Image (cartoon, rainbow, N blue to C red; front, top):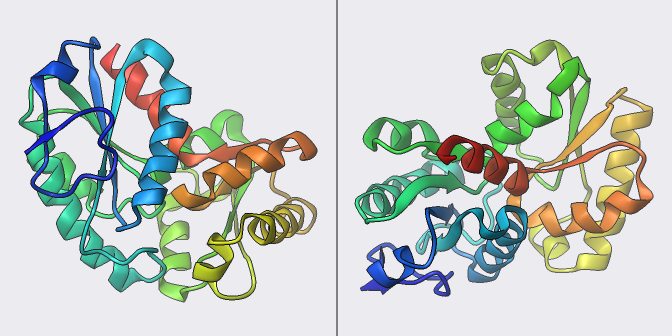
Length: 243
């Protein structure tokens, strides 16, 4: 089964077609670790807007995973599909990099070890961008699972920016319902950002999740501190790497 640049929602058996390779100097595969095709399409649109003509973006949806990843067990389940799909994508002509597009980077380490092309996680790249210049940063997210929240602190330590990390502000209510309601999501994340800045001392706030990226773009004009869009941060890193 051939996967073209337009086929954002394709599943695990999809590969990249040679005709797409001829249309761009490089191809970046964005793997959405959850099973939401609409989330894949949204993140691919963001990625394409970010990279312009520097690369062709192909989206792959992790069918069989939960539609929204909210617990550590969800991440474990998702990682298996990310690895399988990533290994298949890396074998295709023209694929120069892979982006794992979930904030906890499920399967990132395993996939990086299994393929010869660079692999980027939107979580790790968002942390690196938020911490630039030594600035303090926090996270606004819809995820309340204690183990998952603790994993963010651990990621900050692993990346060497633990002293700049100011913690997580979690929106109230059911995450799945909130993500499905853009107006309610924007309002809840706006409050979380304000708390991160005013109470935690953050000078930049990461939107903790690929599906939250559109909300970050909507909120940025009314917010004084940078809102880090994880998908865009990873794409910038990928484009720099592949030249």
